[in-house]
Length: 217
Image 1 (cartoon, rainbow, N blue to C red):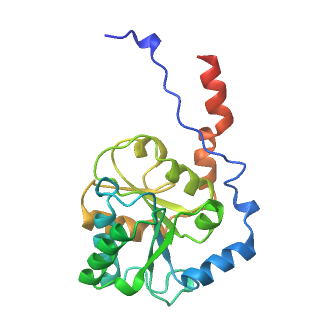
Image 2 (spheres, rainbow, N blue to C red):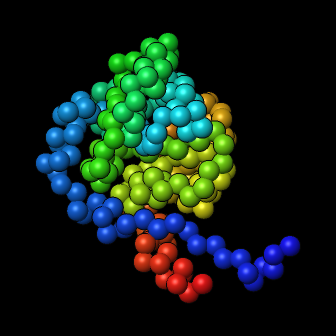
Image 3 (cartoon, rainbow, N blue to C red):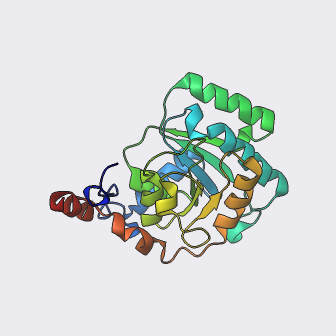
């Protein structure tokens, strides 16, 4: 029963000065691509800790469907197979579970782990599509906003905070939560979306705007 005029929604801010494609270090990108053997591949990435709620299992199931359907063969002139990149977790037990699942799904050779990284601008510059696959609704998806700021394609489930960030089939693709077939279709669709202006869609999520709105309240 809180009065509506007492409620204020302030979105989380991201550092748009740091997450700027114009500031990418080409040498750092080349080094990461060489280290993880990404060069020439279409890279689908999930960023964050490996846990059940984040949907890594769903992501790999969808990725395997995509590979089986050969939906991204020769994408942007690339003849190498697509890769699934997991960023942000060094726990070997959790990695082992994902490796076992990838082996079962027939995509073990296409799975890469980048571990915990601080050079996130470089990470995004190495990615084609950044994926959120959360099983349950979560709050503001910072990686989605960062990815769009870096002009990556973005894919997310149609629930929670993702609905504030992703404009379906415009700056990214939404899919039915928990549906691996829908996610596979979304991955393929994301590759064909124009990216030239996606950065503009997240300018409202700047750190400065978050601070100004907070102080105003």
